[in-house]
Structures are given as structure tokens and as C-alpha cells.
Image (cartoon, rainbow, N blue to C red; front, side, top):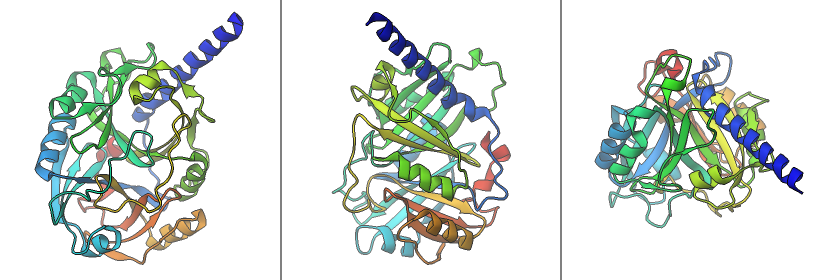
Length: 353
């Protein structure tokens, strides 16, 4: 019995080591250029917030995001995916070195739809954005000072002592979830390029396999990086980060030029899909806008992957876009836009690596 217990413990420690290694070292590898792919990159992640100025202050102070554009949201987009008639939204595009968030404050009422709760840690849906930062930036602490609240352990957690990275989850004042990865660069052999960057956008799914199949076709990446198949990623550090006792998870990752797409399933805490997709004005992350080489090419991939609710092209921010939903109902945009547009994923030097 003792030998079996020791082997289990060694396997869990090895799993933790592998997970910790891939979750930060991959960020320093060169992003795929994807010049031949239909999906070229991620233009931005949409976020519905209650107060645009409050969100700007928090994310510029804590995560070093820079305001680059202010435009109202296209009325056709609001009519198609909002929850209220006559909905309006003012927006602010905020940029890191590799990716962008588009914060949206909706009217009437000035608040997101009030009958929707924030998305929990285990989803379903677009659950969090991960900020990967130098330890001395004190990014996690700045989020807390700005009104965010910790989700799991109050202090960041190191998954493996051999990797100089600690992890923490938190909710901002709107209940929007953030992940922070603090790296001690003094213990990293490769040179530092940026103190702040956006690591990934994470989609939490009740069933990861259909999502992996869908995004493998859509991203033209048949062999994504995976870990914890069957829910084998577990242990106290995962519980401490997630705030969910007995956490068992499975994960997959797709690199899309400038930003990584993370898929995660909580086998230990299953979540049912809602009967209707979340509307654009519900609080939290509401949209992933991809940069595409061709709308026709994007439509063909979406049809092959089995996407639902594929729209006709509409004018959005000076470009043309179509919209669809993935197997979990997450709203995805596919935009063909000029490379010099502030919304384009091609704005980032070296793709933000």
C-alpha cells in the first residue's frame, strides 16, 4: 500500500512539474506566423463592465494596459447579440504588448444585463484572461488594491519549486475573473523581453473533446498541446489556485499568432451549459474577435467544424465580420480588416513575444 501511495505522489508531482513548465516557458517561444492560415490572430477579447472609467483605471494600473481607441459598438452587432431593445454601448480598446481587450459599457442603465451572474471559475464560457508578468510588477497585489478579491489562496501559489512562477485567481469588482502568473526573472536563464503580457484567454467547458475537435479544425492545428487528459491534473496546489476542493482538470492550448487560446474542463466540478447563450451585455468576457485572411475561408472552416448561427457579413469598425458560436455557445467574431487598423492583431512587434 505504501509503495502504491508513493508512486501516486511521484506521478502527481511529475504532472505538476510538467504543467508548470508548459504554462510559462511556452510564452517565450516565437508565436506562429500563421501566414498561410485563415485565422491570422486575435484582434481583441470583448469585456462587458459596469463602469468604463473604473475598468480603465484598474487594468491600466495593475496590468499596464494602454488605451488606444474609443468607438461605439456597431448597432447591427448589438441588435443581433444583445439582450435589450435599443441597446447602446461605448467601448474602449486597451492594449498590452501582444493582445487587446475591448471594454464595453452598455446603456440604457449604464450596466450590463443584471439577470446574469458572473461566470464562475469552472465556466462554462470565456472564464478568464491570464496576465503573465514579472514578479516585481506586483500585478496581483495591484489588482487586489484596486478592489479585486482573491478566489483561492490569498497569496499566489507555486505549482512546482523548480519553476520560478506563482499563480493566482481573482475577481474584479464586476466579478470578472483574472489569472496572474508572476515570474521571478532572476531565476530564468533566457533574457526578459517584457514585464507585462497577456498569456491566454481561457474557455471553461463541460466537455473538452468537442471543443478540441472544433478548434483543431478552425485553427488548422490538428495536434494541440494537451495536459491532464481524463482529469488527471490534481493536487493541493490546484485546489489552492482554483478555490475548488478536489480540483481535477484537463487542458488544451492553441497558439493563434499573438495570443494563446486555452481550453479547460473541470472533471471534479462539472458545469451544465445554459439553455440560451449569454448575450453581449451580460457581465464578463463576451466575445473573441479573430483576425482572418478571408471571410469566405472563415465561413468554410466554421461549416466544416460544425459551428452554429453563422451570420452574414456585417460592417464592424471599418472592416467586415461574420459571427458564429462554438459547441459551447461562445460568441466568436471573424473580422477582415486593414493591418494598420487599431483593432488588427498584426499591430504587435514580433507578435508580442
